[in-house]
Length: 210
Image 1 (cartoon, rainbow, N blue to C red):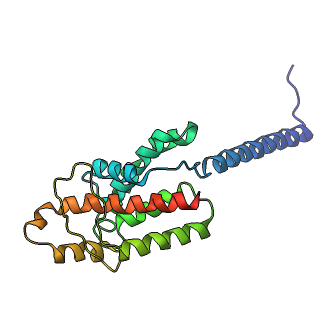
Image 2 (spheres, rainbow, N blue to C red; image 1 turned 45 degrees about the vertical axis):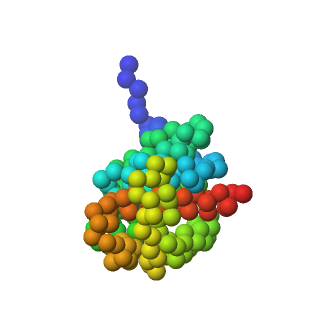
Image 3 (spheres, rainbow, N blue to C red; image 1 turned 180 degrees about the horizontal axis):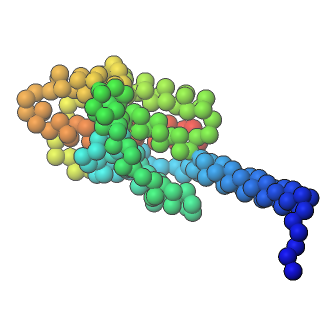
């Protein structure tokens, strides 16, 4: 025998669906918020991170190499879901940072990557701003690249002060000072450059969590 669907029944059913939907949305929002929490930082060795960046650096540019190399070391030392998230991070999306944002010669990919790496662990945006300013100051004023790889095939590597943090300024300053012979190994400069800046980013993070 068929049951009659009363208006009250329809409304009750609709209310039930609405409540179920709200509960699902609340659960989804809670899960999303949980997933967006910063990862727990573990103290990293700046030199170890720099060496990893140097070795990881490939054809995709400074931002890709800097972040991927640093995440590799973090994933080896972190625990649980944070380590898994670091391993699973889709570094290929960082290719846009090559040559100052898709060859626009704007902000250096290594500087941008360094600030991004900090942002994985630091909740407070005011802290991010302060740390980013410190990294930018170093990047602009230091004689770069400071990093020396474990196996140094190019001793006494050329270092220059760029007085800026764009690819145009940083790369341009090095190229301007480089000899014809040094220009043959310009990619080596990029590898050491990304390693140097990420090492500094890790130093800043370590100090923040000291």
